[in-house]
Image (tube, rainbow, N blue to C red; front, side, top):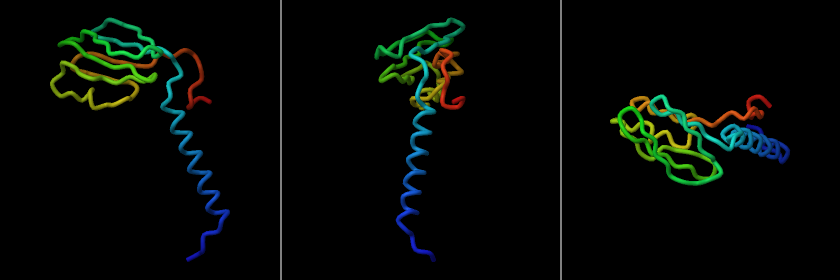
Length: 114
C-alpha cells in the first residue's frame, strides 16, 4: 500500500471543493419568479417575497411556501401526498391535483449551459 503524500491530499481537497460548488450551482435558480400551473390556470409568484400561498387544483387546494428564493409544497388535496415529500425541488408536481410549479426561465444561462 502506498503512503499518502501531502500533494495527494491537496488534490483530493480541490476535487471535493469543485464537486461541491458544481452541485450547489445546479440547484440555484436563475430566475426570481416561479410559474404555477393549477388545473389549467397559470399563476406567477416572485421568489423575492417569502410567504405561503394556496392555489386551487383539480381536486382541491395546494399550499406551497416560498422561502429564501426556493419553493416547496406544504399540503395538497391529493391522497398520496407525494408532492409534499418532493422537498425544495424543481419542478414540483402534484399529478392528482394537476399542479405544477417551476422556476421561470428568464433567458439567462444556467449551470448546465455555462
